[in-house]
Length: 168
Image (cartoon, rainbow, N blue to C red; front, top):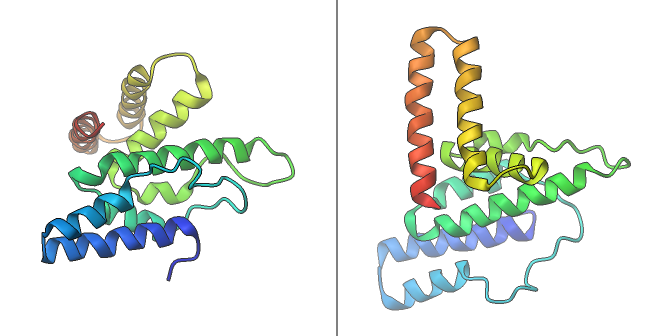
């Protein structure tokens, strides 16, 4: 059951996507596209409680198909920016990290990590931050994992990087 506007909106998209898969009609396509197109820039509000839930993450992962990728990258980016801002306030005990994002599919998690680093450090382009994030992750894996595990994580990270760059 959705507990906030993002969860409700993601669930509506998911429901419409299922309808479209069952009946790929023009009407179902238009309804789906209207749900993921944000033409009203005042539609979203950053006021109120900021949180990320496992339910949101599961819906984001379920909706991650080509037609919806840019919309989902936008949600992950927005939540990353808001979490950064919320972490600045001393009276709110919030870390810059979003632990629920560990449940994102790998390329969305890589996007989140690179985007977070990009918005915090502000010392290079976003594409350079993606490469830097991949390199730092691989260095960490090489130092802390066996050769066999490192090789598996190297293959996974390569796949994440290619999927991310193709997606954005």
